[in-house]
Length: 89
Image (cartoon, rainbow, N blue to C red; front, side, top):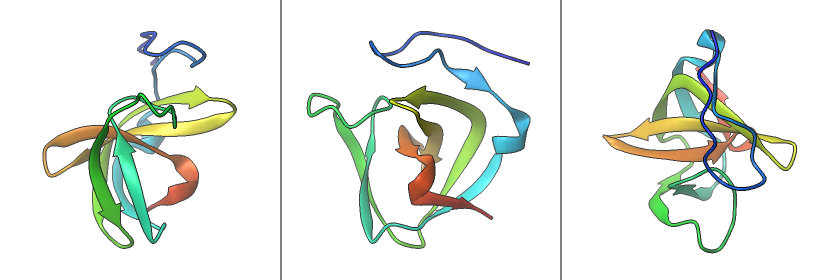
């Protein structure tokens, strides 16, 4: 199943993969969860997470500059983190 929506210029459409649904743990010492995928300085930070904090993915993701970004929920705050900064539990 694919759910597509263009979010930010230079990103792929939002996609869905049920294999990505579930709980994830932050692996970076500290990372900013962004409102939209990508590290653009105009992309607002919605939360700053520390290593071992847990987030939930509903299965939605996108690709930005060849990097996968998951759409995540942290205590009701929705944002995006790159795949290489989280591990699926």
